[in-house]
Length: 122
Image 1 (cartoon, rainbow, N blue to C red):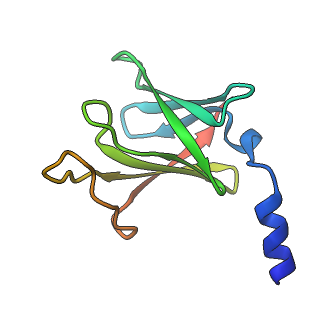
Image 2 (image 1 turned 120 degrees about the vertical axis):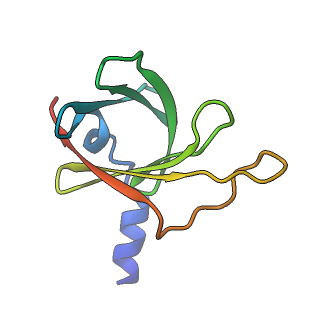
C-alpha cells in the first residue's frame, strides 16, 4: 500500500481532467465555468461566466493534490472554493469565509462546504 501511495504523489497534476467548459443546470438558468491552464504557469485560471447576464470574473486557482483551491481575498472573493473531478463531473465546493479583526480569513470547517455538480460541455 505504501508503494501505491508513493506512486500517486509523484503523478503530475491532472490538468486535462479540469480544463474545459463546465455547466451547472438550475431550474431557470445554467451556470457556466471555464477552466484554463497556461503553459509554464503553476495555477489555473477559473472564469466564472455565471448565467451570462453580468460580466464574468476570473480567479486564480492553486493546484494541490487532485484539487484546485481558491482562497478568499478581501474585496474580491469571500469564499473558500475547492474544485475536484470525480466520475467526469466537476465538484464545486464553497464555504463562506469568516474574517478575523485583522482582516484575515479564519480556517475552514470541512463539514460546512456546499457542493454543486457541474457537467462538462466542452
